[in-house]
Image 1: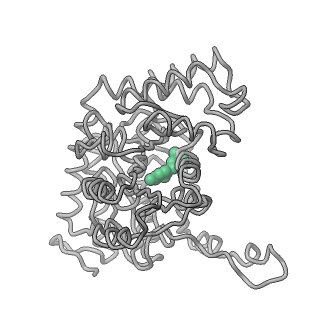
Image 2: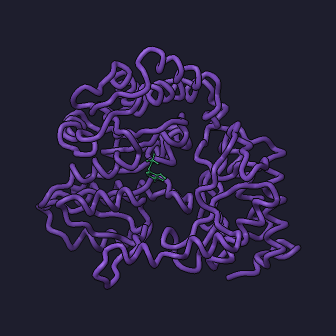
Length: 412
Ligand code: PMP
């Protein structure tokens, strides 16, 4: 994922901020789609600007954020442990709950060991920075999430970026490197904007050929795809062949925090060396208890994963039939490509007026001219809600000249 360049020639370091007017300009047009406060929510339906709209842009894949069992678990944890841990895991911030969750996640993911971080972002940033040292090389997909990019930048290793999901390119780049150098391939398991899966079998094969390790960020995959929700490596029956797998609790687990699983010594090394782990306060009790309950529900209520898959297929087909370009989605993340930035914001506003909330994604998060509406789905969406979302897209798509009445795309 690209990063913005904030450089500007001025003697005043604040000049860039003083010159930043884009958000105000878009707000003045009534098209600003960001930081919208939700004043109420049941997960599926949220209240924004005083009106109820269907949520079609949440990472709440299993639909558990408003589940009474999870809420009760969080409340009980607060009653017992209080509201925060006020310290790092390393020092005063470890609860028995943290250890229980690490043990259960390692077991669930069929790996030897697990370490928790306080966010998914810190998990990747902190783990990559720590495991890749001065003499190592990180091979990183160009579309990897920003926290991976930041992890590579803050590590002392050299980073080589390969074209998105382009195995031939990666192979060429790997062949150039010295056999004696430590190597790791890092990729999102499911890419967060396109909903595309990483080519895990090919990554694993290349890694074996070049004596490299494989690291997958399964933020959008664990609790979403794979056997029992074990993520992208599991989807290809390759759990044993992927060395490190990270996950987040802010999506299917309906909480906040993250984790990394892998072999015992590697996880212990990261636990004892990662600055993001050591110098940041641990997950609060309510967050941990929520995840413990979510993990239980994920394993007991298998219908959630089945329904999520059914819904994803239904929405992909529905949007395609209407003529939309949904890129290469293979998961509950389904982008709808609009094109220009302002066109995308106008589309977003019309969709909202039709009673649907989804996310407007514009450069640098996506390439210029590829602004999109990122939709994502939950196991708890009803059929009526899904059809309402499709109807709203169709209506706005025709109005905005993105599709015609016969289900054809009108844009490139
Ligand atoms: N990895 C990916 C692929 C993500 O999409 C995200 C969040 N959008 C993260 C990591 C960071 O997770 P969190 O929001 O839980 O910090």
